[in-house]
Length: 292
Ligand code: MN
Image (tube, rainbow, N blue to C red; front, side, top):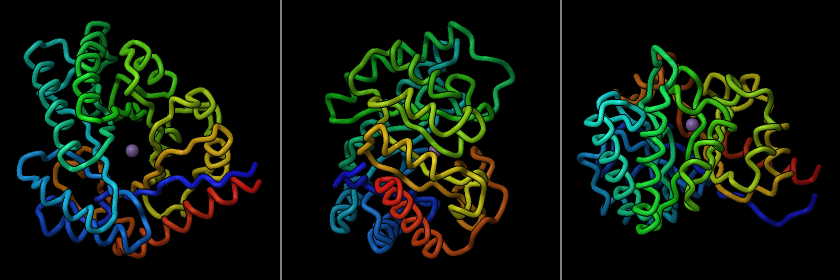
């Protein structure tokens, strides 16, 4: 297959910093550009105190695009059956859309349909219907601000609403909005999917965002994720969207997010070396897949 298309390669801010104060954001934007990435993803778990105007200026100065991601919270969860909890979740989603728009971004993704965490039971029909309704309301709100919503497929220990690409497609069908896309993550796929090809083919042109992570979320290539199959599948469906490297270590901690994601281990110390390596791994993997 020959193509001149090159996907934008991104990096998650937790490779650089767990903070969102202006200096940390400026340093992260500069480090992102220096490592050769074109996009920086911020987790929006701490909306308060995020100086979005300053961040937007620093991102633009660095020539870096931006995306936002998040999961919801137990007391603000649109998949709850408690109307007050659902309302707080819907409000959190609207504020997150506003944050992405203020940053100059065009994508809010993640577990937008659920709190993060291991649930004690399967999602109820009423809870899922609440999530559908909330996201159906959110989609035009986001569209009005130029923001696309991504449904990240997360593993069973982080949500009970969407665990497979098939689940995400069904949820997107029920929401029924043009600005809702599917977001695949190799780390979660490794736990839930049959392989790294079928889900990509099933999602097809509804794929809007991709996270590239190892099975342990450390250095790419140091684990057992079948990246050649994944890159081949992405090339085969003609995916032209961003691919963002997601990695976490106890070396860089965001108290809230690190705990939500169960980041207990030190898988790396040097974010600069990790990121430079990931950039090469992703670019080389995609390039090889395009030539195959
Ligand atoms: Mn992810």
